[in-house]
Length: 118
Image 1: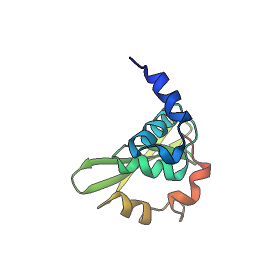
Image 2: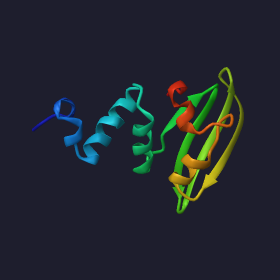
Image 3: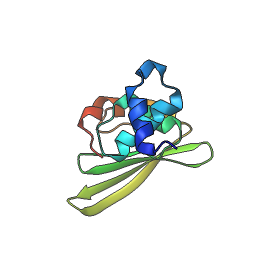
């Protein structure tokens, strides 16, 4: 029986272009859970499999939620230090629509991705 750790090592040794979508996803999820930086493209792959991924940018927590049929929401929680200041959400009909239309300080997520943390 192969362990989870051994499986991840085996996947990391496999050429990336030879990995299946789910194998790529497994590696991305592992990086994300370890709070290792993932690329914007990896973030999008996570969202496409309905993960409720979150990130921080400028003292604000952003979390995508796929809880309702035909609704993809971005929950936005602003903080002042550790104190929660405000909460709101914006709804979109799909993840593609959210990624295209949602803005943070006038920019798409793709444009600020290098500055986000988890």
